[in-house]
Structures are given as structure tokens and as C-alpha cells.
Figure 1 (cartoon, rainbow, N blue to C red):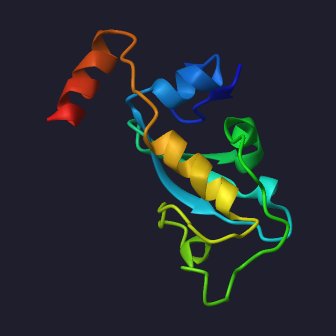
Figure 2 (figure 1 turned 30 degrees about the vertical axis):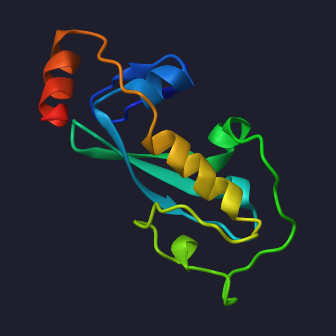
Amino acid sequence: MFKVCPKCETQWPTREDYLGDPGLQLVGYQANFKALEAGILLFNHTCRTTLALMAEDFKDLYDGPIFVERATGSDECGGHCLHKDDLGPCPARCECAYVRHILQLIKSWPKTPSDCADRAIFSTMQK
């Protein structure tokens, strides 16, 4: 089991099921500058709870370069990682940039309704 909602007990057997659920929305990222994989991605669920998952759970979605130095605080840095609700991409040559790329992949992940309730939510979200 990939994840279970602690409030409504919705189950997502796989990461693909989780990312494809129209009842979930990525709303934040809390960076961990000492260990990037320990950063936390925050998702709101339709049952009005927020689920937290480690960045490590999504690391394999990225296949580009991972820079060894952080640009945080430099002229090149846009400060995205300093604000948990800023999900924008980062063009800097920074060790944190790969996580920003993963956020973009998750935000654009195709949503796939799986049953009647999900389809109702999905159609409302699309309007």
C-alpha cells in the first residue's frame, strides 16, 4: 500500500493511483536543506485533511542532473524553497532544483477518476 488517508481511510495502492487521484492536490513543499530527500510534499485531500509525503518517495521521477552545490541565498536563487506554498520551478544550478522539477511533474500529473464519486469531483474540478 503506497498511502492511506489517516482521516477518511482512502487507500492508494500505488504512487500512480495517488498522483492520479483528482481528490488530491499538491499544495506545499517544506525543504530540508540538510537532506533533500527528507523534504516534505504536502497534499490536500477532499476529506479536508493534509497528507505529508517525503520527497524521497518521488526521487525516481527525475532523471536529469543533480547539482552538488546549493544556490540558496545567491543572486541566482529565486527563494522558492524558502516558502512552502511556492511550487514554482527553479532555473538555478542548485542542488535543490531537481525537487522543484519533481513538483512540476506532480502538478501536471494526469488525474484519472476511478469511480462515480471521483468522476463527480473530477468534473467539478475541471469547470
